[in-house]
Length: 279
Ligand SMILES: Cc1cc2nc3c(=O)[nH]c(=O)nc-3n(C[C@H](O)[C@H](O)[C@H](O)COP(=O)(O)OP(=O)(O)OC[C@H]3O[C@@H](n4cnc5c(N)ncnc54)[C@H](O)[C@@H]3O)c2cc1C
Image (tube, rainbow, N blue to C red; front, side, top):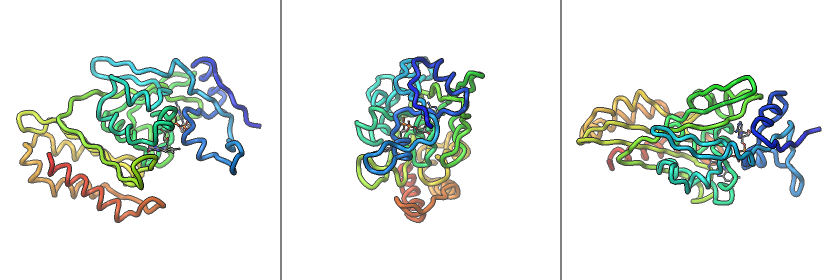
């Protein structure tokens, strides 16, 4: 028999998780679909379920000087309208699902679901997000790229919960979010690209680019980015083909029901090319 529990407090949630038989459910917008039964029957959960969405202790946004702390049960729609959330993250969230879904869906669900097409992940990789994982045994803080290890794979243990997401709040001169999907709303990305640059005195002093749905995880290459930093805008544009070929080496998409690998690679490179050309 499967137990369904709504914990009263965060500590209660950690206690339930400690027996390693419970699965956290946040907004349920992934889990309900993955575990759905036939029409008009309840979802077919195969483990005990811990409903954490109403835990007030995990619903917050705190801004500090350099970082923003986001409680793991804060709905995406709240983040979309929150004054302390960076514009670059808001642009991504605005194109996720629909308002109804965003009112319950969370960043932590997008992270733990670990889909290569998870849109918010691009903003989390770009903003050097750190994920706070906690259990009764203690706390660990890991960069997002160490939490997600592959499609639907994470290092989150059965007794752990994502407690908080910490993001940077850098200044950018220009940002670009491109989501290619089957329609404008409620569409899972075929390809996505989030890029940001900070230019000072005509020199690139920060360059970040993340790609979704074209590899096993979100792609972000600090190596390529470091080759762009320090260049003038003209030099960056002159080096466009070299930069493109470096990204091309990283892009390894798959064929699936939404798109195919040839289209995904071509379009991803077109997006990067246009981004550099338009700077
Ligand atoms: C109609 C529709 C449209 C959608 N559109 C998009 C879209 O445009 N872009 C996109 O990226 N996604 C989209 N999604 C997918 C989904 O909404 C997102 O992935 C969302 O962020 C999931 O959050 P959630 O809180 O609902 O996760 P849940 O379904 O509650 O959980 C998902 C997974 O995360 C785990 N989990 C959740 N919270 C925690 C936590 N705090 N600690 C540990 N594990 C946790 C759960 O155990 C589960 O494995 C869509 C879904 C639907 C139904």
